[in-house]
Amino acid sequence: MDDDILEFAEVEQPDEHARSAAIALHSKLIKPAGSLGRLEELGVWVAACQGQSPPRPFTRPRVVVFAGDHGIAAKGVSAYPSEVTAQLVGSMLTGGAAINVLAASAGASVRVIDMAVDSDAPATRSIGEFKVRRGSGSIDVEDALTDAEARAAVRAGRAIADAEVDGGADLLIAGDLGIGNSTPASVLVAALTGSEPVAVVGRGSGIDDNAWMRKAAAVRDALRRARTVLADPVALLRTTAGADIAAMAGFLAQASLRKTPVILDGLVAAAAALVAEELVPGARQWWTAGQRGGEPAHALALEHLDLDPILDLDVRLGEGTGAVAALPLVFMATRVLAEMATHEQAGVSGPLIEAPAT
Image (cartoon, rainbow, N blue to C red; front, side, top):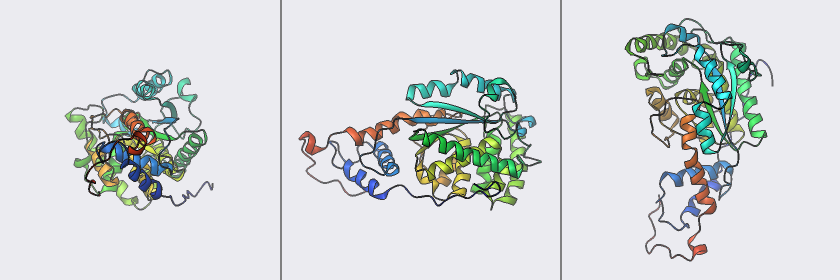
């Protein structure tokens, strides 16, 4: 791949024949048509992504957490100091973070990648193969990255997705970890949905009113800069994102090219997804939204992507936690199609009146 040019192939859409076959199979199972609601829709989506009906139960779901610090955190936009990012990376590596607990409960494994943590501590060095830099520029007054750094981060995300799929991952979740990362994510959402700062600025890590006003000012100033490069997704990442979010965008785009389904998490993942959709139009067909978080920008991003979240639990931690919480439902939806008996197999009579077509 050329170091100066980021070229993406055209994405293939999930298999329509498998989708139609899954819909038809649902009508033959021993239940009233549509009686499992969204579980039926999820199973059909999985079948289309896998290109077969019934779909295969998942065997290696994988959470990849992209960690990075953000220069804008120095402007007081978060309830926590920047050093917490590296500390949480350490906890994640020893299995003590929320994502470790939830992923273990759901049957998924976790990988942590240091893209831009502002530390050279041993814990971060051990996961820093793709590290682009420490932290990022303060996006209200300067670019988050250089052009070379933005491209390197996107390429890293693509390489990580390829490695995970080649290693057997059959379902992916992108998690985020970084103090202050909801600010660049909010800017990306505002820029790509045409929203104003007041519509996207939330409470993030639990900020008070004064911090909210500082965050709103930071988003306002960064958005002015972002709007000048809207036509170029990589330039938008350079101006506004950070290496962690840029890598996540590359990861999500490449996952779609590798025909691998993805469950999106919260605001940061949704912001990266908006950019990934710009990089690879149609990539969103390979994603489902695990949850709706508490950030206003998250709802705007999901609406723009036309994704209906599975859960609405006000999970706003990040790390991939909301997506992992939805993972068992995706498993169930898949196994219903793969394992539930049909009327013919079970010797159960069908309905007297056919359900209306939907």
